Length: 209
Length: 209
Image (cartoon, rainbow over all chains, first blue to last red; front, side):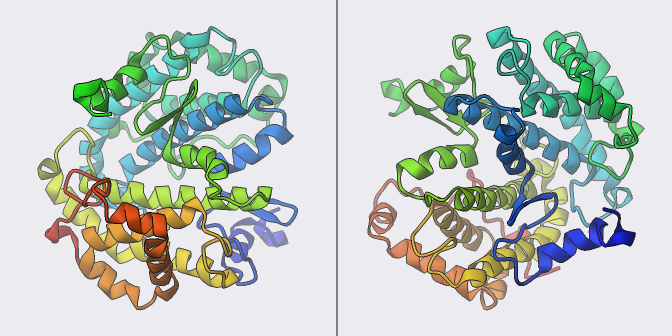
């Protein structure tokens, strides 16, 4: 619901600061599900997974999907912190020198290390998706991760993708899922931009160190 | 098991890199539980919680405890990154200038914001522990968090603690639990040091900005 109809960011912040909320989120995003407010992206996905049939029934598989999701979240954090190495409350322009230094390690060490790991995970069981033959929420996260990294660090990704055939194929498979394809073609799909987590700053995208 | 008897760091890394492991951890720490290797601290705690009776039975309470744990983990990450704002692979001495700049925001904005949030959570239900009358794993995490912050940022914590009476009381309660007290008095309790996550560097501990 947009802000002019009582929704949007004001409503989001209001619920967080409401004294009547006994279990308040620390920060967005959060999900309202009946009486529950559930925060932390990986926690939200773990809650939604069984309800949307995006996770297997098997307990150990669920632990594993959640573990992969937390690892995706760690890389997303590192990407965010690269344009905010000093403070989230400062603009990128105020921490550009530090960002440039940090980005060399992100593109030269960290992105390769994480993506090689996900490639190895995909190779380990030779399934269609990360955990087997059916799509799980972490496949959707890996799709978004690769899309975001391609936008933010195109030179780095061009250099790395030859070594990541399974991750690239997974991305294509997720794109082609009928409802994901419909979403991607709709106005609900917000284009990557320099106010999101995956930002393209040419000066940060070095093809290695 | 120590390294000289086939344990320690070499064994830890070996299991991570073993090609036969179909669900490898990205990084330590991880837990071996039967055939499972479970990584990501919050994921490990979520697995252990029911087994050690450190979480309520109620599903929504478990989601909430996990959410709090993920929020603790976020602050721990921010603390770690403050002495490693450029790269984990560099020594602190190689990124001291950036660390000093970042630490002003950590001590002036981030630590207060997180600790005020946890204080509000404790105030919201007036229970003995974070979630109610019985101890959960997130109480143990909050204990360790406060202990670590006091070690790393003593001046900052002295300034803040007057406004955090419930968090300070929770810390004392956890210390006094018989088995925690025994652990703290034993050699199993490793003293905080400058190779861990909570490091005391005098130059980073400013009493505000």
